[in-house]
Length: 397
Image 1 (tube, one colour):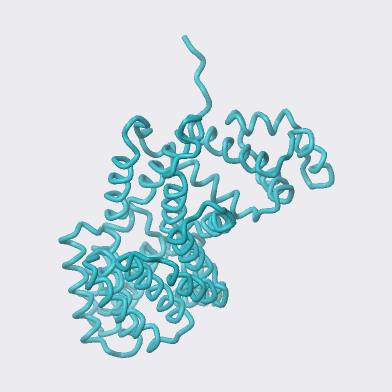
Image 2 (tube, helix red, strand yellow; image 1 turned 90 degrees about the horizontal axis):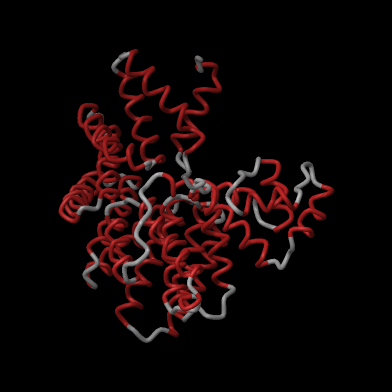
């Protein structure tokens, strides 16, 4: 009977750490020497075991590696979490043509199944590393960009930002790929609260669009950057400017026939109009987006459409309608780990239960809010309100 090898997740993380060390041209001996003054020393034998997937680094050792390699410890922690995803799904086949794998990845993306999508990109890149004939394949940068975009969709912002910066330092990016990398980089900065840097990256990407010759692609990228600009304006409470940006992007995506992105932009426009008090128009747009999401199989957009309709129902005093939409949204969001949306839905279900004096539902939703509070990736005023509630001494264990 053969010896069982290390788990796939440990092996993937070990390969990643080895790549970091080799990129910096550090030997195992050098890393051991550099760790001498840190809280936990790393021996070369233990680091070798980690890189071969036969040991998992403790957090102090993760911190030591972050200091030695000059990267945020959050990046390493997120990257380890990404590696764990490999154990969640059956290993994909590595023999199909690259284009066939990418078609499947796009299908998973449209369904909002980003964890499974990421595993496909990881498998392709592992195949590329293992095959000398494919090490310089033209699809490598393309897959790396898709992978970084997928990391952003999974809210692994620190990891996506670091890897975007590394890609932007590459001399092999085409002008088109450079604009895409800048767009993803701007997205990660916006999500990490670096709004000024995000707007600078958007402006730079828009300027570099002039170097592209394919007009359909220019229109798509310009529309995508306009959505991102609207998102950044929205989070800084420039709601009118954000609505203008989203309105422009909806029109642009419709003109080029991109129903998926038009649906997303319409959801954003609806929320901006909700903040501006245009509730009737907001509802109309949300219902349009919901129909498009249902027809197109866009699960993430469907979940957000129901969630936004739940928020609108709450603001209009329609508790039954708000509850129904939040529950429908959670039915999609919970199994797919759309944590921020799940949390916001539960927040309004909690508020509804409190207003109805339903103690059982109040306590159940309150427990869920506490459980997921530390995992909410996006800024939401509801988070501050709930923390304030807990800080007033209403927390019960």
